[in-house]
Every structure is written in structure tokens, then in C-alpha cells.
Amino acid sequence: MLEYTLCNELLANEGRSLAEQARVAAALGYCGLELAPATLGDAPHDLSAQAIADLRAVIEAEGLRITGLHWLLSGYPDLSITDPARQGRTQDILVKLVGLCAALGGDVLIHGSPKQRLRPEGMDDVALTAHLAAFFAPVAKAAERAGVTYCIEPLSRAEDNTINTVAQGAALARAIGSPAFKTMIDISAAGQTEPPVAELIRQWVPTGLIGHIHANDTNRGAPGMGDDPFPEIVAALVDTGWNRPVGVEPFRTLIDARVTAATAIATLIACEKACA
Image (tube, rainbow, N blue to C red; front, top):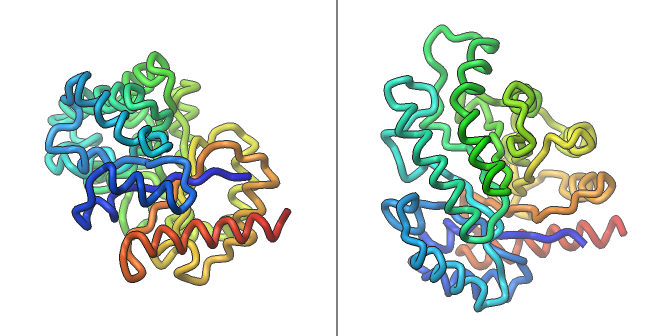
């Protein structure tokens, strides 16, 4: 059976504590929470060892685990992975977030954050890949040391002008050449950019370059809130032997965050049962 982990920001945005978020997720059948660092405070990269241990204990007390981090730079509007004047500070914070993920017990970080990765004007794809490979090299080394996987997330062209396809993400991963640096598939973004997603999964998961899956609809809702063919998508995950938690990441709610999370996991489990 596939495992599902819940991205926590919709619950956090309702003012729910981390313990409440974990209780909701556990009651619905999720294996864990995938945390957005900005939901942990203004400077999550500087949390003390005791604060990190306390956060982890809160989640584990509800029978869940922290599976990883995403939205890495959403709480840092002034950072950039492409602007040379800001890259040093950005690298430092990302390396600290790698350490945070490992200390929380997570094993994957998802780098989307479109506002902090705008392509420099006039830079072509070859130069961009080289530019990003140089930037991420020390981050990948930190991930290797920490025993976690760092994934560059292809985003839709409506959000981003750097990495839009899995092939572009894979090219960056290959350029870096670290086993700890991979790309991933966000079903909403991929469904807008390079459908059908099920075929994308069948093509790329066997390469070993896919470190994570985000489950969401192209309408930005949860699985079950739109028309995306999740039976085929889930079947592709099962058939390719996907064995890591699938992150459920809706960007809008159906009634509220709990109902949205319930709709998502019920849809995904039903799809998996249908292909058993």
C-alpha cells in the first residue's frame, strides 16, 4: 500500500497548532506531515536543538512522523538562488534547512519557491543549468552528509521560468552528480506542463532520478476536487514500485483544510484499491 503524508500549511493557516495538525492527519490515515518551514516560525533555520526535538516529539506523540520539508524559501522573500548578490545567504539558509530536516527525522526536501528562483534576463537553458548546478553543489553535499534527499521541483510556466519539466530537473540533477540531489513530480504542475502525468511517472520513476511525488489536481485543489485521472496516476505509481510517502499538497480548500485532506486521501486510497 502507498503511504501518504500531508503538507501542513492549509491546517496551519487555520490557526491549528502542530499537535492539532498531527491529530487531524493521523485520524485521516496519513503517515506523517510534510512541513513548510515558515509554519515553524520566522527563522526556522536557526531553531535550537531543543526546539527541534520538541517539534519532533509533538508529531511522534500522535503516531506520525515528519517526512520532509517543502516551500523551503516561502518565508524568505528576500532570498534568491539565481541572483549572485543574494546566493551566499540563500545557500547558508538552505544548508541549515537540510540539517533541520534531518534533525526532525525527515528524509526529503522539496525546492519549489518560484519567487526566489527567477531566471536572470538573457540566460539560456545551458547557462542556467550550469549556474544552478554551481549554486546547489554545496547544498547537495550537505544533503549527502545528512542522509536526506534534496529535490528540485519543476513548476508550471505560469509560476516559474527556470525549471518547468521533469527533463529539466533531471538535467540539473545529472549536472550536480550527487545521489542526494534529484528532481520530483508535482502532479498539478506536470498536469499543466507535460501531461499525461501517468506516462511521465512510468517514464521517469525507473530512472532513479525522482525523489518525491506531490499529489494535487491541476485546478490547484486536492485529488478528488477536479478532473485529473488519478486512477491512472495511482496505477502508474503502483506499477513502478513507488515506495516512499506521497505528499498531498492542495493549494485551496473544499470547505476547510480537514475536509480537503480527507477528500484527498479517500480518493487516492480508492484509486489504489481499484488497481489492486
